[in-house]
Image (cartoon, rainbow, N blue to C red; front, side, top):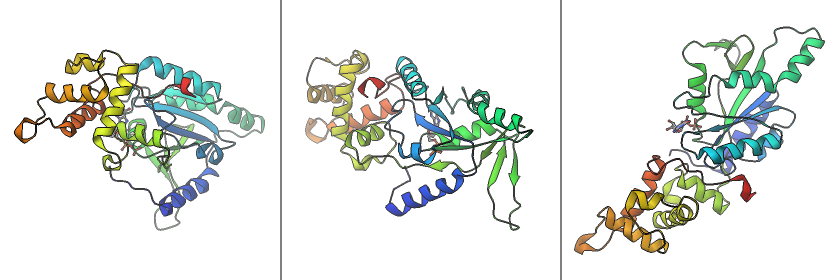
Length: 282
Ligand code: GDP
């Protein structure tokens, strides 16, 4: 992870987004489908007030499908257009073009009534670091894109990527900062590997994950590490260390190594499709 947030960064990122807001019709916000609320910054609601809104539940390949369906309903009930995407594999990405058109139909209708023809919809992608903005844009745009905008050196201007005759995309995504000062949010972002590991203690994170999994995804830890899930979480971590032969000198168990294996395997999807938050907690 190569980002760190300082107040200066945040102010600059916010100012850039504010400036760009004048230029766009629709805000396309990427969130991580495993933690749709923890991976968004609600400030965007104020920033993008009066814009058409589309939320993309990205990395849906890693999330629990049933929970993702609940999140789709949740965001729809809040008035957002919603879609799920797997940008890495390009799934659901092209389909967002017609959703964008649908989300902006009021604007198209307004233009039509005023006799304005062929004015493209202008869109911006935004999200916190690591949700997949670049991957999504690359997948959506592919190679067959044409950049429009002012020539470099003549006037400094925005670069627009023409997706098709109806939609143009601002080529630099808006960056929102995560709200990691909230402990639960910070923990969830760290668990999916979205913020620096050093911020939180590995053993503690693994224990939190063990507790969450035994409560919400019974059987997963037993299946992968042959552990008795009725034990307390420290005992379970110990059993994982034994299962994976994580030993220090003198045959002492290496809990931190076991914690790292668990976290790594969770992040790589080896434990299955798991969502860390549901709309029910709201
Ligand atoms: P950005 O910081 O928002 O631009 O995020 P990136 O596009 O750099 O993506 C961050 C990481 O997430 C990269 O390792 C991507 O390969 C991965 N990624 C992006 N989208 C997806 C997705 O839909 N599914 C999975 N499994 N990984 C993804």
